[in-house]
Amino acid sequence: MSTDLDTAAVADWLDGRLPGFERQVEAVKFSGGQSNPTYLLRTAAQNYVLRRKPPGVLLKSAHAVEREFRVQRALEPTRVPVAHMHYLCEDEAVIGSPFYIMDEVSGRSFDAPTLPELEKDQRHSVLDEMNRVLATIHDVDLTTAGLLDYGPSGNYYRRQIDRWIAQYHATRTEDLADMDALMDWLDAHIPPDDGQRCLVHGDYRLDNLLFAQDGTACVAVLDWELSTIGHPYADLAAVIMQWSMPATREGRGLDGVDRAALGLWSDADFIAAYCNRRRLAPIKGFNFYLAFTYFRMAAILQGVKKRAMDGNASDPARGLRLGRYVPEFARVGLIATQE
Image (cartoon, rainbow, N blue to C red):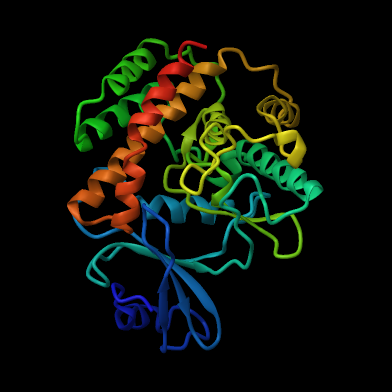
């Protein structure tokens, strides 16, 4: 049972807001997350999920649960699978930080992209569904969804690179020559704006998706903290970047794996299927988008490491372990610039 969430305060706030809500609440914290602490709320009538900002001093624009709530509520009428949103509480006095309440979605999550718990044909189907949902996210009509103002106009990569360079410098704990070189290269090689402007998830990977208990349909896309209006190839490249990682519990990648033998997709097949679904021409200069995703992940993990060192990470021990990957992401990102 969680000991760091004031369930009595949560129950007081929810009383009278949720139909049929019963005041006796048990909270269990989900393990593994490094961003916004998330809890399963068990009541006699129904289970809910509470997601909050972490305590302590936070970087500007980080941990934006308000944005997570807004985008998922906007997506409920669309074909993008999301949990039903109930309420957003922006009053920090209730539990010490803003939070929102959503339905619990029953589903399966897969941490390892080798999908060892599935048969070969099911693995292919899961990755096809992952591809389909990504294309669906990028095809959301921003006007109909009310998300035209969800992100600023202008070159997405320009503002993202500026943002994450600033975030990295605000949390850096050591000098990394590869990271400095990668940031310099990206800053000098931003492609011209090609007019593509869509909803992007910002952290699209297999373990941020929930799948049906008895099938391969995606029932919810989770963790929308980094979502914004931007360029679709950043999400696509993030999938390919993740697969290039070591095939370990922490790496959650496919490096060295015989994908064809396991029924897993090649990078080229995943990219081609995505382009076909969205009726796009083959992507030129994909190495920039790939290098960008390595850089952004390095900056994110640097922030995780700094929060762990400062004592306000959701899981400090795991945060320190993940922080050790920052030099590796910077190194591989720099290699990607040369391809």
